[in-house]
Length: 178
Image 1 (tube, rainbow, N blue to C red):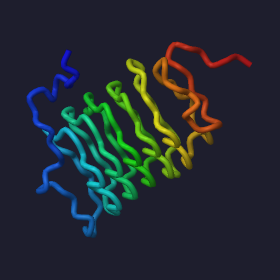
Image 2: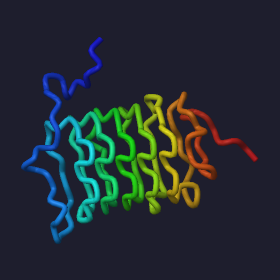
Image 3: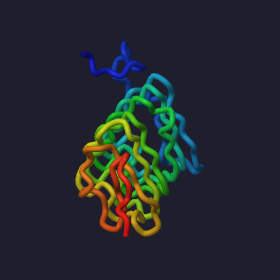
């Protein structure tokens, strides 16, 4: 069977167009909407951009490559339309200002340190239809566990990869009584 997501069949791998590339020297804050048809955000595409505040991804997005938003001032990510996103690369959102992330059901892989050093990140939510492969140190140096509610992840997800102090359970299981 062809593993290509239905919404991207027939589309060539398409990065963020160069005409859409964000100029990091801007003196204003920007909310970005990645256009339909884009299938991936390239490695380091918006790394260290200090003027991005939020981003919305299209349904055609399949992957976000390593370091894509590393060190940016991004504080809001909208994955609600990114129903075909399968991969978030290593350090993709490392050291950003994100406060919460709701991952789409389609997500299969989160690379190592993808959300590390996001000191304000205190809420995450995973879909419950697939098992997610989580890299090392994905949520290191975040606020998770300090005030977060319970987190539920797909059956088969390795719970040991989440930070100490964070209550993580598989979907369909109840937190232990006591």
